[in-house]
Length: 113
Length: 110
Image (cartoon, rainbow over all chains, first blue to last red; front, side, top):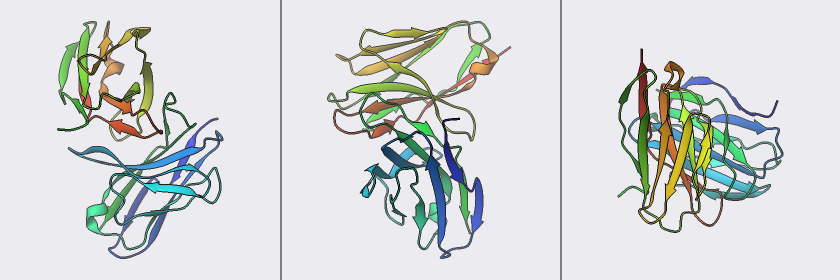
């Protein structure tokens, strides 16, 4: 089944404790992206990647890192999480080109206390 | 002004009725348009692309008005299962970046 898999689905952590949210897709998509969704602010792009070893900042990159060592994986790293990073996170992927919609992962609900 | 704006709703719709809502975008260079559906606390799912000539998929009809810079979604014969938030999505001419509207919430009631 074609899908984007995120893990974990739920995570509660403490301020400053490094964490990684994994994202993997099996559709051979070149493009991958991370979004966060907050009430009243909608979906905002954190980072994206057009292909292996190519990453770039989205609209809200502060406090996050990503890597794209393999085509299928695009982990999101929070080196020192803070409470304002409490949010619902989505990973998405697509083929490159403006006519392709995204396939989203099921989301990761992160709480930083 | 936000790049993509939607009426947040909720639109309370009797089952079987028709509901329509719009989404406006500010960048005239926007190239591609989509409607996504999002159920509470779940991932957005692609509902349909929006083509220049307008397009229909079952009970759903999408329209694009480039002159006035808006797209619309019409749902006919609403079902209870149509209750969701509908997200308007715009892609600029270059690259894949999707810009999302804040969503329009639709509640279909018996």
